[in-house]
Amino acid sequence: MADDSYEEECDYLFKAVLIGDSAVGKSNLLSRFSNDEFRLDSKPTIGVEFAYRNVKIADKIIKAQIWDTAGQERFRAITSSYYRGALGALLVYDITRRATFDNVKKWLRELREFGNLDMVVVLVGNKCDLGQSREVDEEEGKNLAESEGLCFMETSALENLNVEAAFLQMIGKIHEITSQKCL
Ligand code: GDP
Image 1 (cartoon, rainbow, N blue to C red):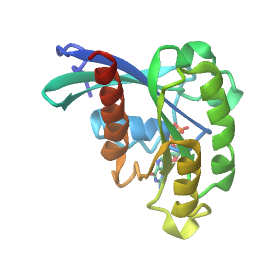
Image 2: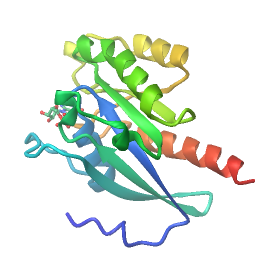
Image 3: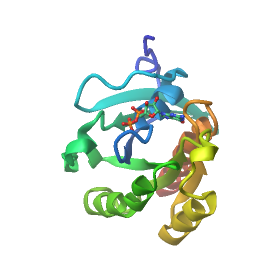
């Protein structure tokens, strides 16, 4: 599907990144948000991909440029250029794989090392459609987010549950912070 949102005019443009372990659903969250698509196939290439989506908040058009690791996290090769200039991040884990939740702290350390200090971070527990295989309770996600000062949401890219809400929560907060700075 052609992405024509890059061509549309906007009032602000900002960058946000997706991070988290391999196969937690980052690419599918992004394709849901940008094209309303879910991809059953796995990613063919290694590199960085990004997608744009325009969002209207308080009659301003905000163009969000969201970067996806496209497999680089498998090699721990994400570098400072990936985080450079990013105002927000969705830090994703898979509720059916505890190891991906245990690694959230590692990702946070990396974010805090390379990213902007006031980056808006939403902790996302993805694959909540797989309730029977759940290894991480929603409460644990909420508690971790609260203790680290993050927003929190459980999502399903497959069933399109809360995907829009997670991205919009991040975009809305970034807008709030940047518009306060511009006053
Ligand atoms: P990434 O490596 O983090 O970008 O993960 P992908 O988006 O490539 O997804 C990894 C695998 O998880 C794929 O087989 C997807 O079909 C599957 N997947 C992604 N999101 C969901 C979801 O919300 N629910 C379920 N059941 N599977 C998902």
